[in-house]
Image (cartoon, rainbow, N blue to C red; front, side, top):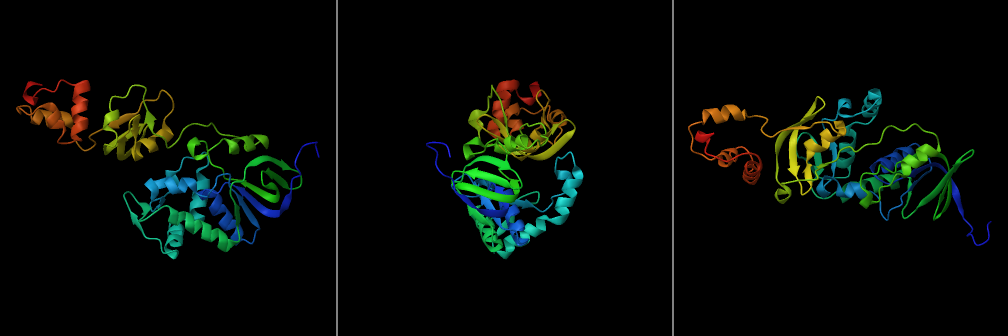
Length: 311
């Protein structure tokens, strides 16, 4: 022991240690525990499931009844097929129903809790308890070493395990405590990394003329690189978000063009020709099909809002 250093305690042997008590880590712990493994889940935050708690606006969009392998982006599409065949959306729905959680379908097969995301976290906690999976919070990992077994060094002592699972997530929400821990461990053990880029993210703009319209949402088709999604977009104070934007961000690379069809069911040129004798002003005409404040701003920025019979 080095002078001035503190003695570390070695806290027993585990079959499986999972680093990260989010949705993936907790589900992994439940399944490993069901198989008779001695499981320890380590979480660096003060509580489990922090991202679950904020998902779905606090009501947790916990699954989608229309989930198919083609909904996933993977260099190995067969993995999605086998994973979804072994554990389906209905399996998780059955778990939710077994715990008597009320839920509803919002749109496009999305299922949300009627009440709070806390209910899903509580279910996962109870299932971990039932499977014998232990959870330790406020536990910071300082190093991982491997000889015959893995040794996980933490601020709460050293943990030894036969198998180690890294379920610490990505770096998408630093304010929630997200770090690049998983990438560092992958590099340490020589695992191949795919290119890292943003996914399921909103678009922000340096010059954005719609910030005061934040909160306005409407139906669109958003497309990029031959892929398109028809869902709502949401104006934010920095740019665009909403389901269609978040989906298309997975297919966008820097400098790619993104097309947003604001009126997917309308032929505006045809409509304007049909109303070419009308004295209705353009912004008022567009307000028949788009949110009024957005239509007014659109005309302020891009068109001289004359009566249709003068255009």
